[in-house]
Amino acid sequence: MAESEAPEPGAYRAYKAACPGCGAPVAFRSAASTHAVCGYCSSTIVREGEALKRIGKMAELFDDHSPLQLGASGVFEGKGFTVAGRLQYAWKDGRWTEWHCVFDGEMEPSKATGWLSEDNGQYVFMREVPLAKAPELAALRVGANTAWQGKRFQISALTQVHLSSAQGELPKLPPLSREFTVAELRSDDGTVLSLDYGQEGGGAKAYLGSGVQLKGLQLQGLRDDLGKDEKGARQFSCPHCGAPIQLKLEASKSITCGSCASVIDTSAGPGQEVLAALQTEPVRPTIALGTVGTLFSVKWQVLGFQHRMGQSPGDDESFGWDEYLLYEPKEGFAFVVDASDGWSFVRPLSGAPSYRAGDSTAKYLGKNYTLKYQYNAETTYVAGEFYWKASRGAKTFNSDFANGETLLSREQSKDQGTEEITWSRGNALDADEVAQAFGLKDKAEDLVRGDVSPLGGGISLKTLIIIFVLFILLAVMLSMCSSKRNCDPERENCERGNSSGYRSGTSGGSYGGWSGGGGSSGGGHK
Image (tube, rainbow, N blue to C red; front, side, top):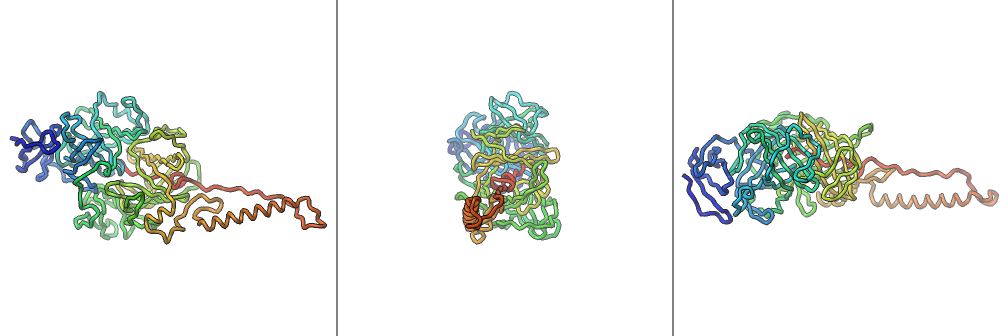
C-alpha cells in the first residue's frame, strides 16, 4: 500500500510506496505520473491506483554531459518546476535526453508536466498539446511546409528512434527498444512541434515548445561536478593505434585520436568504440583544442574542430573553411567559423525560417534574409569531440542567407535513409575579438581575413594604408599625364598612349564562413 505524505512545498500531492522489486521507497510528486524507475534496482514500475507494479527492468542509464539532474528546480513562464525524471532515446547516430519536469501546484495533468529536451546542441521546453488527428506519417516529407492550428511549419526531420533507458518519475514510458518515428516540425517564429508516432495503435502525440537557455530558467540544484577532472570519466584505447583516449563529455558521439588522428565512433556507448576513418593528413587548428576563451561574457571551451570544403553546382573551383565547436554547460554549444573572408559566431536554431526550395529569400522572426550562395559541402578533416557523429566525408547541401550582418545557414543532409534540415544563425566577428578571446594576440595579424581584391585576404591595416596612398599617387600621375595630351612636344616632354583601366576582382564567398566560407555545422538530430 502507498504511504501518503504531507505535500512538499509547491506540490499538490506527493506520496511514496515500496518498490515491488527491492523494497526501496519510490516517490511520486505528480498525479500525472504513471511510471517510475527505481533508483536502486532499476525496476520499471507502473502505478495502479495506490499500488505499484513491477513490469520489467530498465537498461543502464548512459551518463551525459548535461548539468541537469533529478531534483533540480527552476522557473518556466513564471511557474516553478522540479526535474523528476528523464528518458533517453537512441537512434543510429547516438542518443539524446528528455527531462520530465513537474510543475508545482498544477492540478490538471495537461499542465502538470513539461519536457526539457536536448535539441541540436541547445534545449527546447515542450508541453503536450491536444492532437485530434495526426497527419499520416507516409505523407510527411523533409523540407516540405505544412500548417498546424493556422501556423506554418517546416518538416525538418523524420527519425527512427527507440527508448534506451529511463530514470525517475514519468508520465509516459514507450516500450523499451521498440523503434518508432519522431517527426520534427519547426516554424519561423522559433516554435518547435514534435510528433511522437510511438503510441499503441499507430497513433501519435504532439508536443509544442520553443528554444530556451538553461541560464534563463533560474535553475537550482544542478550538478556540481561539471568542469572538474573526474577520475571516473570514460576512457578507452584507440582501436587503431592503442593510444589512451578520454572523453570530456560522456554524450560525445565521435572523437579523434590525438596520436594517429583516427576518427572514432563513440555513439554506441562504453565498450563499443568503432574506428570510423583513418586521417593521414593532419590539419593543425589555429585555435588549439581545449582552449578556453571568453566571447560575449561567456567562457567557452573549444571541444572540436573540422575543416570543410565547398563547391557551387556547375563550378569547378572549390573553397574551404574551418569550424570550431564551443561548449559551456549552461549555454550549450556554439561555433566559431574561420573563412577566407572573415570570422563568425554561430548558434544552431530551434525554429526554422520560412523557406521553399527555389525561393530567393527566407523569413525568420519577422525579418527577411536574402539568399547569397548555395553549394555542396563536405567535411574533409575532424579533430576533438562532437555532439553529433562527425565524420570525414560527411556531405550536406548548404544555402546561405544574409540580412545586414546577421547570417542564416541552411544545411540539408541525407544519410542511409535519414534526411534532416538544420538551420543556424550568427554574426560576423572581428579578428581582434577572436585574438582577444582565445589568447592569440601574438598572432593577431595572422587572423585577419577579408575580401581585399585583387590582392587577397590577410592584409594588415598598415599595408592597406600604404596601398591607399599608392592609389592616390597613381591617380595624380594619370591625371597629370592626361592633361599633357595636347602639349607642345618641342617645349614639353609629352607622352602619347592609351590610358589603362583597372578592374577590381572579388574573391569567392562572403559573410565570414557562410558563403564561400561555409555554413555553420549542422550537427545531428537532437
